[in-house]
Image (cartoon, rainbow, N blue to C red; front, top):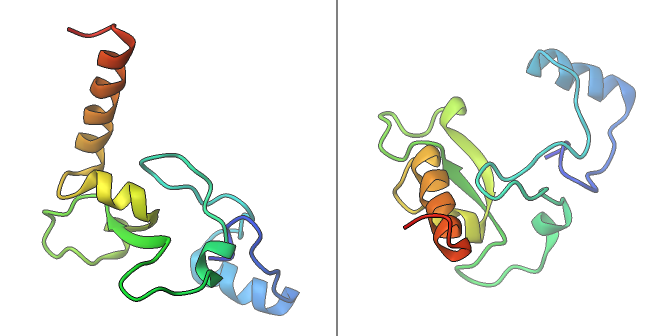
Length: 109
C-alpha cells in the first residue's frame, strides 16, 4: 500500500526494514491494477465504507490455482477490474477485453 499514489511516507528506519523484507526498494506511486492498468490510490483505502462494497479488492491472477491465496497469485484490484475478470485468469481477461475493443473498432470480425 505504500506504493499506491498518495500513500503516506514512512520514516527512514521503517522504510529500510520494509525494503529489507521486500528484498527491493519501495517505489512510491507504482502500484497499478494489472487488468485495467489504472494507478491505485491510497485514498481509495480510506473512502467511507458502505456495507458489502469496497473500491479496492484483492484479485487473483489465476482464480483456478490451488492453493489460491499465495503471494504470487494475489494483487490489489479495483472493484470494476475484479468484476470484469470474474473467474477468468488475468491473461484470459486481457484477451477477452482486447477482442471486445477490436470488435468495437471494427478490426475483428
